[in-house]
Length: 75
Image (cartoon, rainbow, N blue to C red; front, side, top):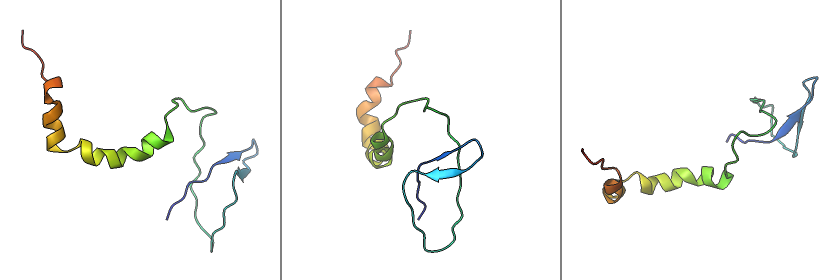
């Protein structure tokens, strides 16, 4: 199962993980170099809960319940 671990990289390209990690055998990794500070401060909990909430949000009953907010008055 893929796992995300935070780390830092220095000017020489050396990577240091911020928490210890053990793997049973040699593993491949992907390294994504991020900006210094995130552009948006978004709650990780909100991002992680979105797929679960989408199950309720994306139902026909929900579309019908909120449809009055989508109606555009004709002039």
